[in-house]
Length: 383
Image (cartoon, rainbow, N blue to C red; front, side, top):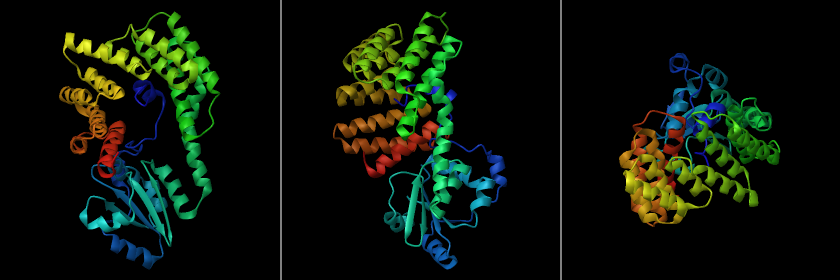
């Protein structure tokens, strides 16, 4: 479902995912006084922490971890963060792939990167992910001081990012197409709050408004992007529904998708539970029109849903041959997962290594960083 609203979600929701740079510009960051990092020398850092009585802060990362690189280039050079935390700890940066760090990494093994650990006396506290500078300072206060108020502030920040968007789920806009776009994104924000365990607008009201927005848009004069908005709205409504209503929404979505190009049409069938129909659509299209990256990418996912791993792997290979840039990262992930499900672990590992090497050549991006990190974590720790 994460891929349901790539455009709308980016427009309306400032996500806090891995790889997002701080507002601090690179030029401004370079002028900031940096933290006094000890790099890849755990014995020295432990000795300094013991001698000074300060806690030991450890950053576990790697060159392939783009969120780690981004934290180093932006958040950890933010002047406010440096001023607030510079003297509060001994700062140790550990490259998990440096053989010299093997024993220390094994003693503090983590599955996700970047991971930040504070060692103070006999206590050890860790947290994972990309953080803006102000968020990091708050979490650091939690780790060092047990400041429950700082934890609460983190939850408030999360709500601040999603709450205004989620609240729009029950507030109609005057323009029917704007209403549909905003309401679709709002439904996704509601799901984000639900995943976090936070309170949300009434789910029934959200679904009611989204359905009303779909009806209004259907009766309004057409606009160029209208079919895309309606398609994404149906998917958001499908995800927000359950039981008998989900079946009803799925049927309506598939009916609407008949007017769409083959890839979104097949996507609607696959997600709503008719992967067999989706496969036939895509197979017929490739016979008549050759192939396109998006077609083979969707075909790989469709064969995966059907448990046809051999042809799914062939489709993913075709997608890799046709695609370019960051769009290939999720295909590497899909192919590795397919190989794993097919019982071919050597192929799964080779694919993860290829995806990891490819990711290192790409510019940093939010979505790309997340997928690149997932590829590397799976390679190290398994599916």
